[in-house]
Amino acid sequence: MSDPTILVLSSLAGGEKHGYAMMEDIERFGGVRLGPGTLYGAITRLEKQGWIAPVGPRDRRQLYKLTAAGRAHLQEQLENLGRIVRIGQRRLENV
Amino acid sequence: MKRILKTLGRLYPRAWRERYGEEFDAILEDRKPCLLDIADVLLGAFRMRVSMRHLVQIVLPCGLAGAAIAWGIAARTPARYSSDTVVKFTSYRLTPVCSNPDHLPATLRPSKDICGEGGAAIDKLMQAWIQPALDRDFLISVIKTKRLYWEQQQSHVPIEQLVDTMRAHINLRPIGSAENGASTQAYRIEFQYSEPRLAQDVVALLASRSMDAFIKSSLAQIKAQGVSGPRQYARTIAIVRTPSFSTTPLGVSRVHQVELGFLAGSLAGLLLTLSLGSKSAGESRKLRSES
Image 1 (tube, each protein chain N blue to C red):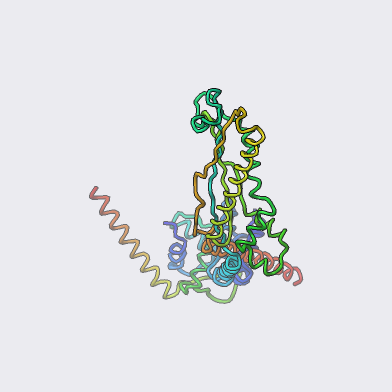
Image 2: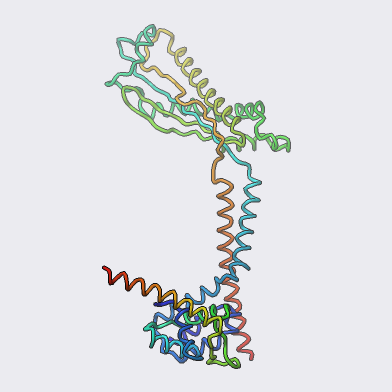
């Protein structure tokens, strides 16, 4: 699982975070070390799509939060992933 | 390493840097960098530059402009068609038994053991037969009778210039030789013109001119030696392929030219996007130093 979009959304699902905190969190729960270019590429896309939003005034360590649309999108993505995981596991058991 | 990453961060588009630049720099300060981060930042900057916005605003219009220019050039450049024919010369050595001119037809059978005139000799002879096809007076007569380069003629372009143009569109080249009881050399005569039917007519005239020269030179040789004099070689000439007729124009098709124009324009647009970004980064640095 290395899709930065899902990783960033999942990280923000646990609460507001700035970029560096997201990187640390993602490395901890996902075992993936996101580069700064990849992280900010994902943040730019997600903000443009309205799935995340900055919190408070502009800051060098800008906090971001998950929006309602982002939560719904993450929910949908995780359900799809869950379905794939379940099918894969069932197939593996039948081998 | 952090300094390198910060410098590479300047490669991001100005608008992006205005919004995320400070956060991005902060993250580079907080994080322990690694070598992979250099590639990551470079790729990130490139992706950001070639975003959909840039694609629609700069790259796509440049590509379309390139395609339009290519279309314009293609439309103004008249299509050219090629016609060609192959003429084959053969030289046989006459055997002593059959050297009597009365038995000439029998002597024309190739012998496996005895070759005709050597390659260099026949090549020299062929030049003498082929070259008259490029003769100035002959080409002028063809240009006038066939009304070639009519627009230029109407515009009073000097006839010498038209002869040069025509020579440039004529291609005479040997395409093969063989030594099997006889020396054989084949020549390809090609002419390229904007009308396929005229190209074919001209090739027929060029081949005919070459054959005329061959016959005249052979008759002159016989006359010099005397009709009953001893002869070592007999020569024949044949058209092995009649002048072709092609309705397919030469070179790259117009569709391909337009495609190439689109690609070139898109590439130029991409370079323009990158250079504009670099300029913006330079301006930002200047503004920062001023403040």
